[in-house]
Structures are given as structure tokens and as C-alpha cells.
Length: 424
Image (cartoon, rainbow, N blue to C red; front, side, top):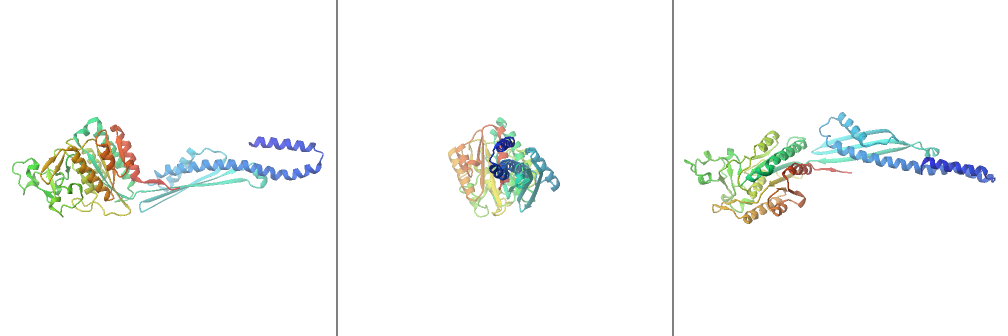
């Protein structure tokens, strides 16, 4: 019922009462008219105020979510200005006066909280006869987000097929974007560390490890260069290793514990050297740029070394011990079927796809049992079932049909890793 309609009805009632000769009725009704009009009008006023409050709540919710994206980087005075700007852009109710928007942002131990409050007044029309001049509005919204300490290993297919359909080009763009998101999420040193593990049928550790006693040495694995011996092999080695003897090819067992767990050296070709866990964002981005496409596919070794990168024990010791405030995550990206692996027990090449797939499935199972989460990304080609089952859950498997979608996929993963959530 509109205010105009209500006034017209009241006027009609008064005209009828003037014509009524029963004076007592007029007196009684006149006395009752004021509270009746007040009560009926109060319903109208309340409805207006309720609608305004609902709209204000929606605007404050939107403001809190938008503002949370900038809260960590803005000084307090700019945060307040930005809050008001966001609110005004979404709230258009001129009947609400004395509008005030305030915010409170706190950060502690990697957890962040932003509260946005809105207040205002809606002037009454009929409720004034009952003594109420305004309805006061008060709403609030809270966004809580956080990023636990994150140690992330990117196991990235660098095989020859990545050169087709712009896959390597788009992978580099997506990886740079993900690194940028992770850098912004790291508000203090040590919050986020990333390792990059390019792989084909091997992984390139770099020659800085050549003096370690981790390696199963064979000059023939380096192509039998003239002058190579078991004592000077490090002079000829470019830094690559291939699969260990089974079952160590699918485990994180330290090579210092068992001779069968040594890493067999291998000829590198053009494979880009890995980078262990790091928060040197310049070096990480440079490593992405250095990747090149060549060689056959062995997903097992990419996953195994991503696991080693998150470990606390040799060969890579940059990882931290498990803790409630630490997430360990692997992102595996590949575009092809397994084609080649190595059986170091009897020095033979494995080319049976089903045999290699079984090793990949086993290393996935072992990694997940170690409480490390796995995202898998299939780019156009590859064993979809194997990769889907390797992921921690089906929502963490991405089947990319066009390389241009990689940036969106990596963006979604980065957002999940940032772990932002609305609290109430």
C-alpha cells in the first residue's frame, strides 16, 4: 500500500464520519484513528527500512570481498577511501541518509581478517505519529582469509610434444601468472616457497651435486665420452639422473640409506636444470623462461623429484618438516602418454606404456599417503584416467583442450592455494 493510497483512504473515512450524526462514533473513532494510522503506517515504514537494509547488507558484502583483494597492500587511509568507493558504486538508495562505512583489517601469523561495517538512517513517514522519527540501519560483513605456509613443487613436462599447439608458450605465461599470485600471497619471508622440476625421461639436478655420494655411476650412461672413468665422471656429467631401482623409483627414500636407492646418472641433452624450493621470484621466473621442449615422457620421475623437492632429507633438504600450518602441494602438468623409463635394477630401458603407467600410479599413491596434495593438468593429450586418479580428488584434475586455457586453470589453482574464504 503506497503512502498516497493510505492518505486517500483516511480522507474518505473522515468525510463519512462528518456526515454521521452519531457523535459518539465520531469521537471514539477520532480517538482511535491516531494509533490506527500509526500502526498501519509503521508497517509501510518498516517495509521500506527492511528493503534498504537488505540492499545495504548486499553492498557491504560486495565491498568486503572486493576490498580483501587489496587489504594487504594498502595503507589504512587508502583502505578507508577504497571501502567507501566500492560501497558507493553498488549502493543506490537515496532514502538512506547519514551513511557511514568503516573497516577494520587485522593480520596475524598468516591469517587475515577484514570487517566492513555500514550504518545509516531511513526517515519515517507514518511512524512519526508514534514518536519514531527514523529507522537506524546497521550491517556488517567479515572476510577471513589466509595462506598457510606453502611449499609448492611444479613438475612440468618439457618433452618434445610441448612444442606443438603453443603448449610451451602458454605454459610459460600461466606459470608466470601463478608465480605472481604466490609472490603477492607471501606477506613475510618463508610464507611461500616454490620448486620447479622440468622433466622428460630424466631430471636435471645441475652439477653442483656431483661430489655427493648419491649416484650410481656409469660412463656409458653419459654416452661413453673419451677419458671418462668412474673416478672422473663428474667432469663429463651435465647433472641429469633417471629412475632409481624399483621400488625406490616411486619413493622418497634417502640414497644414503640403501645402495639400491642411488640415482643413476644420465646424459642431459637440452633439459633445463631444476630449481629447489626457493622464494627468489626472479630466479623462479627465469627458470620458467629457460624451459625448452625435447625428449620423451616419463611422468614418474617428474613426480618423484617434485616429492624430493618438498622433503627434508637428501637429496634435496630445502623442505620443512610437516606442521599444521604448512601445506605441501605438487602441480603436475603433462601433455602426453608415458613412453620411456629406466629399470636401474638390470640397466634396461622400459618402453611398455602400461608398465610405466603402473609406476606413475604408485608414486601418486605414495605422495598422497605422505599428506602432499596433488593437482594434475592434462594438456590436450595424455592418459586422462591416470592423471585424474593421481589428483588428490577429482576437482583437482584439469583436462585442458586448448593450451590457451592454461592461464585460467593455473589462475584457479593459485586462487585455491591462496585459500580465501568468506566467514560470515
